Image (cartoon, rainbow, N blue to C red):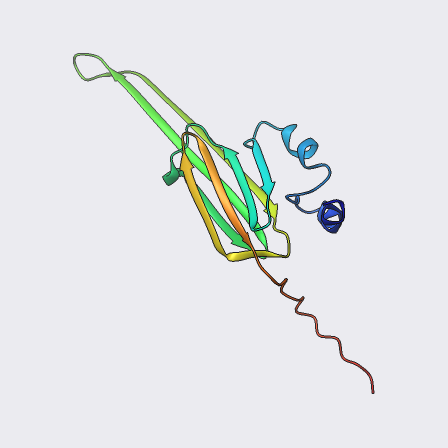
Length: 142
């Protein structure tokens, strides 16, 4: 696992890796990010995010350029009126977050599944048998 961690250290300056040595320090210092558990097994990766108060319709998950982004936005409004239907009190609240992860090279970004239950969002990412080679072609000089 140590070699796996080192592969993603060079990307630390732009976005966090799932398996960055400073993953916990970098992200749990801020309250704007939901707590996350990331686990790996031989078949894939699981990310569990604590998202209490958010419905699955509030959450958006996307993958772009090997970066998984989970974001959510929720707005609540409450009005209290008197017997003559005049507004006495109006309150509203809004909460949102966005969290991104650089995916390991062996992640199958085409087959990602997600479930939401009891305030926990589980995202499952399958591993590929073969890592897709970089799209850089080396030309040999003859």
